[in-house]
Image (cartoon, rainbow, N blue to C red; front, top):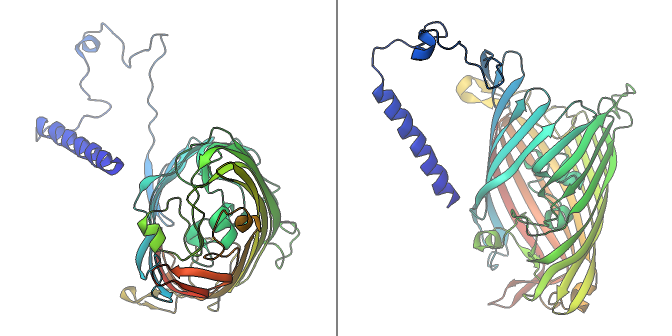
Length: 468
């Protein structure tokens, strides 16, 4: 419905412009500031030009020239850099092959996990803005981010609207297009706070040595709409202790943590726990795009308090990227009249290295030293980055003791290894080649019709990504 409305609005705008153009004289010269036709009252001297408002103040128009450049996206800005609009596009296409092949509902196929359009910039130097739209694997097209950022200084800023919640290094430090592996680790993938509406105080101190964020948010654990009346309190700290010491080896060492406290005031839908997809819905496309290792019973809802905390360590040096995080949490669930506080813990460790020599200071756009662009005579290998990641997740015994899920079909412990490599032909294109191995603490139901269960599961995963 939203898409039809957008298309209709665009059509009306185009038709209006066409009618205006048709009504104009074809050979009439364009009006300028000096020869524009004035209303009769101004021509006869009965009123002054430019017009004045009700307080007698003159309406003025500041003239600014615009410049356009293309590097990390299309950027339009004024010559004094007071106003800026940057447009970015990101699209990901996945080919997934599951083994065993006869899983249900997960099945091999081609999926589009994300298509995004970003519009961001600043309106004067004190106010930044962001609007981004996303079409996810479920086929829903909706607002991803929409916020205004008051930025009087680098050290203190206030962001209001919808944006990424500052919980977990995996979520807050960098966006999905810059990941080492195709998706997040098991804990942030299934229990991350994602994006919410709220207000956040944040900033960077001492030339980025310390980064902080503290905010209150809508408290929606998953999904696009806010159906929760209470608010979450979320905080984040990241330190780069050697940032200003002159040490090139440890300059990009990151140490920090984050915490979140909230309350689900009204019953919320539970989502299956998955291995390779972050989704806010549970429709057919989402079910088919990932294996499931735990599915809650139909009469179980998310309800009550939740507390989470995480500690992270990340290090970027020359060609090396190292990221790790430990997470713990307790989540409220209810089954009929029985309330459960379910403990959850997990961690993930990722390591990658550019064998083609590109150096990193963090996870961001990679510019290959020798791009692969045969049409322009560039026949280098591009940038090649082998990687490995280990991820672990464990749920408390209460998940089976309180019958939140069926112990005969699911597991409360999972270990997962991603082994693969990333290829960057140029700065705008990226390919992931991933072999994901899931190892379950107890047999998991893979095919209900055939009553098939297994303690292992594999995914061969190719992702093609464009981002500029």
